Amino acid sequence: MSVEAAHAAGLLMLLSHPIRCRAFAELARHGTDGVTIFEMSIHLDVPQSEAAELLGRLVGAGVATGTGNGYYRVRDGVLREAAQALDRTQPIAPLLKEYPQLKSFFAHGRLTSLPATLSERAQQMAELFARFVAVDGVLSESEVNDRIARAADDVAAVRRMLVESGWLERDRAGTSYGSGRVLPVGSLSPA
Image: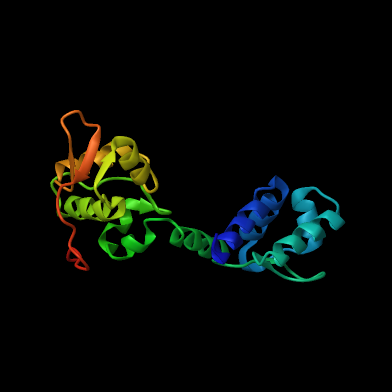
């Protein structure tokens, strides 16, 4: 796991506790006005000592700013940066950089929808997944599915797209798959 991914996981773990998540939400709700320890204790209905500890943890984790009896505020963009760091660790991320026109079909490194079947984007998506699956020799359906599942939930739809676009060929029984076309080396579809 990368340092960025570990940091993002730590933030998510910190905020997975209900009271810390509520404290973070209160800070976000108050925006630039911020809140004091006393105000936070009232909003969360907890003793001031517990509110101080909660705010201290949020500051220590880097998701908030503030000290002592001053005002505490949420740090803008921290969770967005953490999500982007996690996105960069997804297996398809390096290839997706080369197909920026397809980014709207993905969320957090996972395929969320497929472009219209006959569109240019569908051809680009098929090429992207052909490169991602990287069929070398003959693979079983299970092996193809495992590779696709690293970036898509609807494995059958992506596999069908690869076959229909000619990037994958399957035997008559539908149990073995091989490369249908030669992938271009270093060249990409036009943006």
